[in-house]
Length: 79
Image: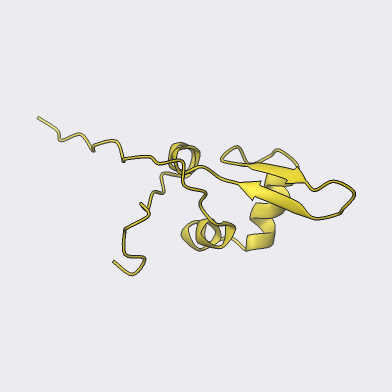
């Protein structure tokens, strides 16, 4: 009989680009451009009005579904 991993307790936390980059072994700019172009499906990039800057939202559930990575808000980053 195999054990099943429990589903994490998702909160909708916006996982920072730097955290996703570290977890995936990619550069933050790779993640940003992938989100901007719609290639990466674990978040959203929204261009600010009258600007070349973007805001990013990567909800913890989408990151977990697409990358298998999850860290809760209270989880120790080093643990």
